[in-house]
Image 1 (tube, rainbow, N blue to C red):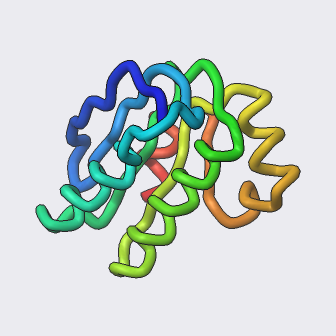
Image 2: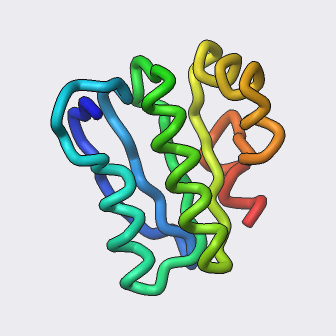
Length: 115
């Protein structure tokens, strides 16, 4: 994955990961999102919100990493939701039917209320 940054912050019991850059295949980089999810899991975080408002592009590899993060959180009894998706990213999720599995919200406030 190619990332500019992944920042973490808390809003009550929800851990928000602010993603920036592009979610694309870029060679031999480790899947940083999955590494961040593993760290949250170790710390006991079970409610995760991925804020994609600063993500400029997502390809199929990026979608795969989002699905992997979702699967890992849900298997541990948690919830993972998305917010701030671009129209193209939402369309990609809907086309692959992932949009019917992973909840997404237009903005962070709506997403936080849903937890």
